[in-house]
Length: 354
Image 1: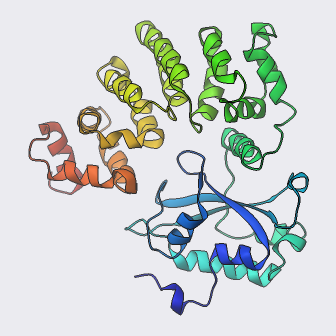
Image 2 (image 1 turned 90 degrees about the vertical axis):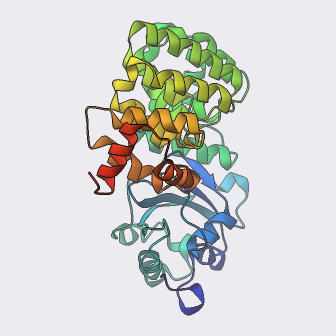
């Protein structure tokens, strides 16, 4: 059992921010880039609830902070900590790691996180709890931070917007930047961005669809754009274009229409694309919430259980059972006497019974 906060003299990250007169936001950077409320993160830090979006048995998140007294125009360059801590078997933060990090911060900066943060960044980076997001994830994180802090997009945004609005030749796609695409996706519900993207989907090269997928999977999209993505994905299914099937699925991860998304995932699981490991990985990593639907759960794990890669079931099961939102659904699958035989055999392997 983790040591309680009453017996632990080390403050929480939230308290550390308050002591430094900092305003802050917390973003999850594990599965989908999204904010975590301060109240929820307080409970996570005190081990009152498990981390909601674990990835590889780690909590991976970013603290974005700035001086409370700063005006909005002075928030252009907030301080950012990219942090990862291991989780225990219950999905709770291993507080000794968090405590160690906080003790390092206090030792180097005291309560002057903002005044001295830039001068001591090299010292703070020299610890085992930092990580560096990949290019696409970092671009999308930057884009979402700007939206959250009500700051203008990067200088690359308008060029990407012009491309999707049809103001640039379609063969100019190589001029688009990863950051510009991320900014566009972060603002997909602004102006006519969603509609214009939907109108040009069928004309986009696979390279742009790949970049779109890496960004759009982290934002909420409307029903109309979802419908257009499904229509396009069905064409890719007919053509046997598996890469674009996966790209379009990732683009739909944040759809407002759970019904449309559920129906399409069930269709995908009965298609030849179900042979692709990437399909299962995307569902687990970006659309895990759909597994609370028993029909999706059964179809998903039956396909995984019969896949040629015999290690796939164990890997995905152990990954997903750690996600609080679907943990009960997976445990109910273990107890379900009416599950398909293939799932029973695979579960037996996971628990050492076969």
